Length: 410
Ligand SMILES: Cc1cc2nc3c(=O)[nH]c(=O)nc-3n(C[C@H](O)[C@H](O)[C@H](O)COP(=O)(O)O)c2cc1C
Image 1 (tube, rainbow, N blue to C red):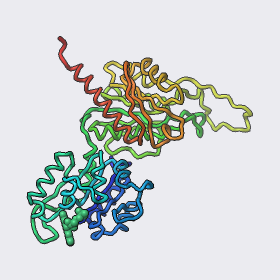
Image 2 (image 1 turned 30 degrees about the vertical axis):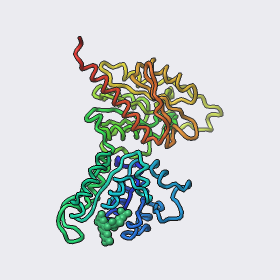
Image 3 (image 1 turned 45 degrees about the vertical axis):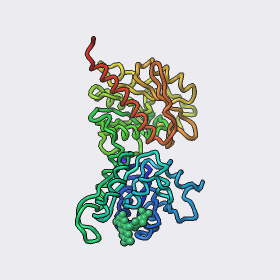
Image 4 (image 1 turned 60 degrees about the horizontal axis):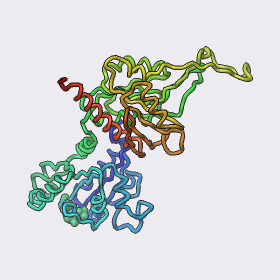
């Protein structure tokens, strides 16, 4: 799975010849699983029409000339600035960058960028002389200084017949650059272990005890750890999700298999995110053949407790920095804090489940981080975003601990 999967991208297209390449870029991003909203300037629509982008993105294209907004509230510039994880303007004309550098907001794409509090990336494309003009240089320097990422341009033959800098980067390169924006590198080369998904406890050869975990949160944590530069091992129960690109994935079924897989590799990992919803119980003696309903009016199952994988990991010598998840339907913070202390964890994530909006099987999560002596509300949002916030916090605390451990004793 590409790390762009699930990302919400606004692709701004401005009026340059290279606009024809932005349609191909859109196709690549959609193929990666990104949700892409295209915004065209008036000039851009003269180069490639909105229908091409609409067909490729599966969304109505936002244009300032439209009487109809793509967002129900009619405030496309604000709604899209909130919706986007990132805005990429490709191609970005000299005129557009000048407007942006000076805070002009007279059109939809410029006003959206002015309202944006997320990363902004520009892929300039223009004639060599326009690119080298001191006005363009100064505008670009201002935009860079304010945090815009600038991808390219490159040197080469230009549509106008000139030769020199100003060609928009090739789309495969732009896609790589965009992906790298999400790569923070805070956990570069740190081995991180993530368990995810449900477990299945056999009742007979065809039936099992399970739970509603979709694995989405664990996979999002694995993805966020990869973005942070970690070497990720993902131990996953049965889910229908694609493995994040770059993760080593071990598939398991039961809690016992999950335990064996986790304990086999935990000692060589420095952080353990225990996100899997591991069954607390398993059937004492699964039937060797299919249980037949004709044979039982009432069927009694005897369940026995499964080992506590999380407590076992936190108990190994030189245990990894251990982060548990407490999925609870009530008494969330009390149960989470009790679990934190009982299992000797470094952190625990309180995660309400069983509701209509958040938790198991849902796309959104509502997370609070707890540690001995404190807590932090991470908030409610899509699981990919929550995972990034969580990984950032965990990385900070893990690195603090590593630094403290490495400091010479006085
Ligand atoms: C045929 C043609 C090609 C153009 N190509 C570019 C270009 O590659 N880069 C650029 O900065 N401007 C280019 N322009 C000029 C822009 O279209 C013009 O500055 C326009 O106002 C940009 O509007 P926008 O930034 O709102 O899209 C071109 C104009 C024409 C007529």
